[in-house]
Length: 72
Length: 514
Image 1 (tube, rainbow over the protein chains, first blue to last red):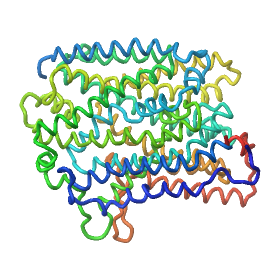
Image 2: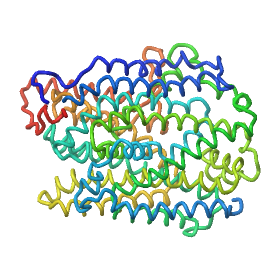
Image 3: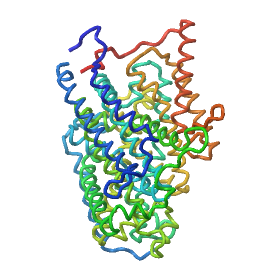
Image 4: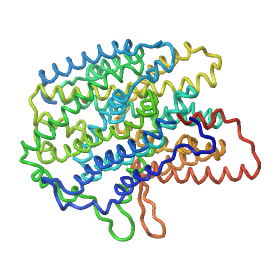
């Protein structure tokens, strides 16, 4: 329901989403070949792993804020 | 060209026939009155989490992407992987921003972003700018889908002179136009389910079978020239390729959901929860895209670029032939048919959604706003159906008449143009502090600067910016968005100081909440 005066539906959980945002922009950090994983250089497997981590973080935030969302 | 690959062609044609039937049958799926624009153009906003996942996945990860990203890896190496951080950045934004947009469009009956801007800022010219930008950015994008289709048709050995050579493409497009006209957004939604299953099957087969054939990932990456394996470390002062990589990812992410077709996909969801869930579920497509990007390296390792049987293909389609050649080289003919069908059908889904999205924009913000304000709901829907045909045939003529190089350049400009609608659409969701004319001025400044810089850079996406000898090259779209925002803020402050009144806001805070 509407709560006048309360601004939108902010939750501190959203800050968790910034993690993937910032890590993936730190290009020099992952622009290296070692360590490889199953023959795949770090540059490639790290970014693929970030997709999975990002999805997991989004899912966590989703479940943490869904109750709040559903109540509105 | 090599001889016609009959087995692959037969599988391709059968699968294509199947989705043609599906496209027409989709008119009766979750039945609604297709003479109403929100039914035809947004599927009645009836798509739950799963269908939205297929629809938006099929919409964003286009055939062109699946051809062009590996082709870029094949030709240029590590830079192609920017598609991965790009998609990592997109989904937090989708998660936070777009449920709000979904909510207000649903509550106010808006069909497009321009509709929202019209209601929020009360300025039809600002809405027109958003509309024209959307349509102009979408047209070359549709044309590029045809490039994907052309490549796989060519790879099956189907070729000919003049009109005969273009015939398969024309047939595919007539089919596309017909089922979009009759079924609206339901057609690509239904077809997306089939297409996505095919593309997942293809990708996982490729990522398992081809590395085994080539002796493992270690050998594949060993075959890649070292200068292609990683981004070049910046020499001297400046960010060098790191800046390019990060800003390309960031700018592309900002632009993506402003495109009319992404907007249409999201707004057709049945609830804001479906949108939120998809922010966590859609990354599975990003993972697929990341794996497919590696196909470019596999094509290097397999040496398809040197094999005489593919020489003609590479001559015609350049690096875009890398993935088709790799599939022809590695798979039995019947599976080549499946893989090519997934790419070919993969072209139709986004092309359909894009033409519907452009038609929605034209109908609401040009036809209804400027031509026939008293149009009935039925006239409105009929106009959108005609507009979708015009848009598609425009794209077809474009791709047949002009070299595909121009489509690629225009699509690049499209990204620079569409991002200029960011302040009006995204900032507008949260605040009405900005003046409507200031937003229009900022849009004009960003669009002009972006076009000029891109043309001066010979239609490459990067702006070789240097501040005091410190090079910070980056994606032109992102940098010109900064110009846009600066102009918008400055003009707003001036107009506010002058006490210029703003038109009525048709939305109220409650419209943005559940």
